[in-house]
Amino acid sequence: MAGDSQNITALLLEWRAGEPGAANRLMELVYGELHQLAARQMRRERGDHTLQPTALVHEAYLRLCGSEPIDWQNRAHFFAVAAQQLRRVLVDHARRTQSEKRGGGQIKLSLDEADGPAANSSERILGVDQALARLEALDERAAKVIELRFFGGLSEKEAAETLGISLATLKRDWDFARTWLASQLMM
Image (cartoon, rainbow, N blue to C red):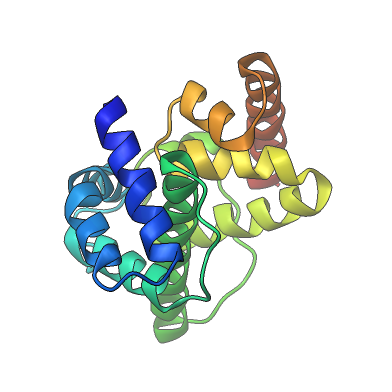
């Protein structure tokens, strides 16, 4: 694992420096982990979801490669940004689905529904995204904790390292954010 982290960090630095092929070599190294994150996220979706884990990973990767150059720091930073992209892909897909069906609107659901399959996962994803946007305005770090843990699948330790905070602080942020989100999603 330490060797992989060093290899990932080295490839990120090469990518940042504009080294041709660095992004592709990085993808080969991290594809399995990204696919696992996407698969975990997709297990929370309905069974007939039109987006598959492989497509989710590929779309997130295209967004990473097509974005402005990122000042990559390390493996944890990469997976934090990848988690953001996975979330954005799911949210964009949900918005497209909603606009095709009946349009947007405020979504109300419980935190239990947010943790498991829902009848309409597009509504669930949009509801969580809207609540996260409100949380981000209130407490940006707490919103990042939710994003890293829920969308990124990072462990408490990995999320704390990514954010540069102690494990105890991360746990407090996690507890606060989950409680706050639960109150927002049940409104």
